[in-house]
Image: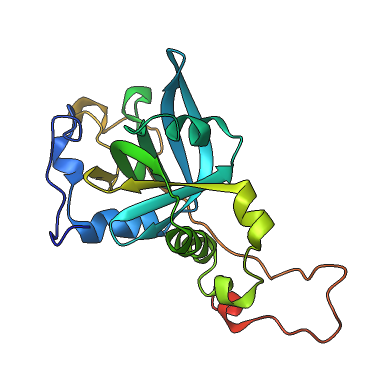
Length: 220
């Protein structure tokens, strides 16, 4: 764990384009990570790049991802002491940026890229902490309102730990960047906002009558 308030830039985390959009402070990086559910985990298997979508959870300056003990990245991370070199990414799309020219169309976004080595979690207490974090990352407070994993389920579940050491965020905001000579063209230009919303919770068909919707769900 780190006491720093920002992640140190490295050759792998400094973008080659639009460097002014990059950020390394904990507040920005953690806010982007905490607002998403799905990450994309990239690694190399037999010389071929593989990218898998998966859920994750954050505890301080660590990320945890989980899966079946038979999944490829989790098996590979347990082979040998170095762990599994990975690249983990998270992206939010906040708006569609429509310019007068096709070339200048873009999106407003927030993203995080994490480079590092993932290690299997073998300590039982850390594993339970990680699994609670995964559940609460999707729905805060849910881990205390559900049955915890039993011994059989824990044995069938593998967890990877990825320390947030080599990390960068990148964001784009604002409108289109049209060329001056295109400003008089009669094409609509601007931003179409993109937002995530929650619907009304739908109870399971076998839910006991009278079971109230928890307050943590209504707060969503």
